[in-house]
Image (tube, rainbow, N blue to C red; front, side, top):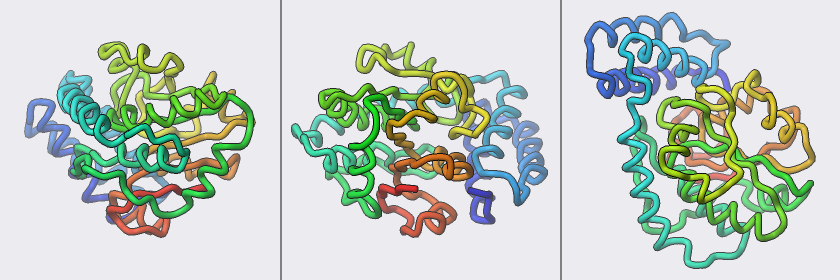
Length: 271
């Protein structure tokens, strides 16, 4: 998905909040806002611009994971929330809806976990059918910390039904996404052993990051699930290569237009 005018305000918010978390240096803020104007070009995607802005702030401040505390609190809140919502659900459609709820929070757009599993709009039946087909191996592309917690019931259901789910996260901190550093720090491999790395610290999954194990699974016969807007904004640029099931909360007008759903809705979107 190419950058659109509504993305400008979101990217500016990213700069301001990230700079504040990284010490609040006015010079870093000014240079980052100037860089945003230089990068805001029609052929760019929002995650590509975000990645360059985040890299600039990291280099200028030396703070490589300004979101570490935020992510820990999200992990704690997600664990507390999911306990009261899972309720032993054993239907694929119900677990997809629970997974969607994990995409509720985002430090840059706000949001909290609700007390109810959301009604998922869009292609929930098509998503369930797509996930039920194909080979035993499948790729699930994670997003924020809360996504991982709310994805675990779905992952375990799929594994009980003969799937091998490879759950991909960033190699190093990128925005407030789950990274392999978080996986090691929190011991998340104990919760699911097949957590793999994208190998990079990019926001979303640009085409050039599809290498190694990710590429093998992408080119395989198993389904691919992508969580969150960052993954949608990047993968929608090349998902004509294969079917992808997107699960997310719509948090901005640009994505809302792209998927045909309102801001604030939870969706399953199959392309």
